[in-house]
Image (tube, rainbow, N blue to C red):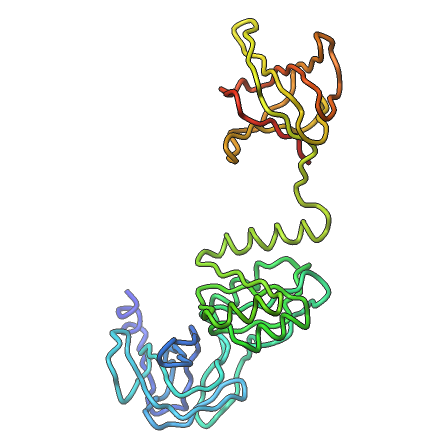
Length: 301
């Protein structure tokens, strides 16, 4: 359909025009170094040309088509990978001949908009990933430095001085770097899935703000008693305290079975609103999860 509409309206590529090639991706390849992916919109791109975007210039050392075949020239409409840049331009910037500069989206390695919140250093595989992740980070995250490429020694040293956590997405942290990070007291977390990265950042924020999940009490289920086709859990409180109005959950071997609420809380056959460390008590809870002796009841907020 695109070809048909172009033919009907007489739309043609203009290889003799000035070069114009929007950047659709930029990444640090583990063997080839900086790789910039573009689609040539106008003009012609050749090996040996001097090109640029955002003030960064490069001499084209290699061109590869969508089949990873080496080509000498790219005409309008062709997607190509370019080798030759030392610094990656942003996704959305436009390559022109002889270092011309057009619409800049963002710098690839920069200080964040907010350095007062949770401090992190963000390193990712591609400029597209960087843009996507930074766009979803809460404003209370202070990115001390962000960029593409593997985690480096300078990242660890900066994290040490700024008390930041290093967060990596689809990047590597060499073994010698992990040893340096351990010596400097720097934590490094790497991810393959964006939502897992964002979930951990959200958890760290809550902990920093004092809003993290807090266990108020734990009780081990030591017996069970039948009651009107239901089961009462006979428990002993081993940590903290539990009240009748607390949020509760059933835990087995460290795994959460489900959330419950107390319907009845009794101590020595007397209804009570609260039990304390060392107390033995009976609890009827809903929903009536199939608990086992040895399971734990946790109250939390």
